[in-house]
Length: 320
Image 1 (cartoon, one colour):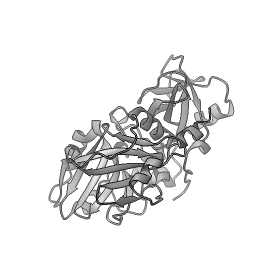
Image 2 (cartoon, rainbow, N blue to C red):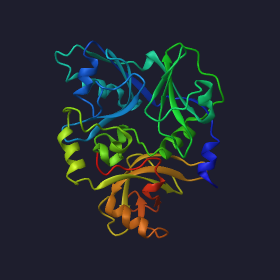
Image 3 (cartoon, rainbow, N blue to C red):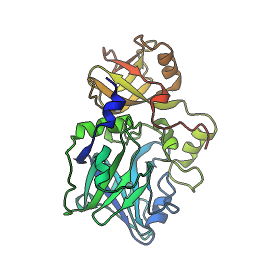
Image 4 (cartoon, rainbow, N blue to C red):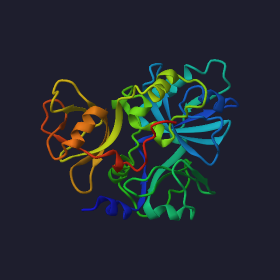
């Protein structure tokens, strides 16, 4: 079965119950987030939908977002629902005298995923990832495609009429999310990665020309001093995979070489995943493809098949 061809035939709309919204509101909203996130929020345009990470001082991601700039005074951060409360609390610790208020605004918005030709019901524009299109009924934030299938998040004020169109199940949307090669931080992988371990620098989730933010020195050092030894890859297993599950190489069954960052059932059977792992172990597994080199879970019989980096829908950037 050609999954790429099958994905191109996927079309529909799904309510994104796994995501939530944080609102930053106030005359210094953009300035405040500029000092907290990996993205340049101040220079971000109103027609953009940028990825960003919120890191601890060691550069480890505590949350990741799709950033939507409504105005310089109102910025929305779409992130995993299971991190909303703790992220609002952590970000608020840095507010001090800044003229901004952070709130859980999940109940104030309707969030839907739109895939394939269903996007044409909202706009006739062909937009690239990381762009935003506004209309009278709502806004579309375009994401990276999954296996060639275009994707976007539609959002509007709560109470707005639900978008019409063929319904898509959340499981299929999650599979497209995995195929996009972009893993959002969820609670099981809280503080597990620096942004480059999930390829965020290659999908415009890190701006290396902006000012400081928590963990900035570590993130920059990983990029420019060649200290990064982990990358995100697509992978497949015949049985279930779980986010946060450790990955082991056959030559070292005691020390994990990777972590499952995102996983979803595949339409062709089994599970597909994004795994962040040591590049040395990945290279060895790809050289010996066809042989059992990687397993998900210690002492596990779950064999993990890694796909080459060329399977990702974006190119890795070696230098920025």
